[in-house]
Length: 229
Image (cartoon, rainbow, N blue to C red; front, side, top):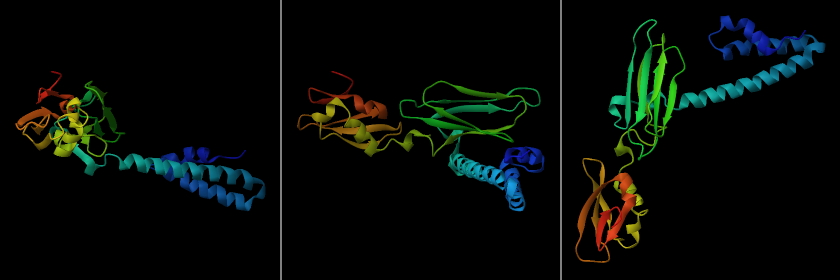
C-alpha cells in the first residue's frame, strides 16, 4: 500500500510545530523511495508533486494573510475615532469578549482586528453600524485594533481634506451653477468649509458641512444650501 504525503504528515505532525514543516521531509522521503524502487516511483512522484504544489499555494496564501493588517498597520482602538471597541479577559472558564462597531458608516468601511494569543485572530469588515462580538472561555485577547491598510478610514481626517471635499461637491446638484464654490479648509469638526459664489453673483458666503453631506448641496436663489430649497 502506498503511503501518501498526507498520511506521512499526519503521522509526524506531533514532531513539527506547523503542517508545512511536517510535509517537507515527507516529500523528500517519497522522492528518495521513488529513486530506489522503480515500481513505486510513479505513485510517489505524483504524490510528491501534488504536495509540493499544495505547499506552495499554502505558503503563498499564508503570506498574503500575514501581509494584511500587520502590527505596523494596527492602530489602537482608542486612537481610532471611527472604531468603537472594547475587550475584557475574565479568567479561566469565564467568557472573555471583544466588541467592535463602525461609528463612521457614512464615511466608509472600518476593518477591525481582534488580536488573540495562541489562536487565529479575528478580522471584521465593519460596513454598517452593527456591533460584532467575539467570545471564548480560555483564549487571551491582547487588543482590538483598526487596520489602517484595510480600512477606508480609522479617523475622519484620513479621508476628509479639501480635495475630497471638492470631489464630493462635484457630485451635488449645486455644482452646475455654483462652479466657483471651493473647499477652502477643514474645521475642527472635520467638516468641509466652502467659500461659495453661485450664479456669478458678487456676494460670497462661507458654509461648513459634514463630508458626506457635501454631495447634497443645492443652489437656492444664489445661496449654497444643504438640502433641497
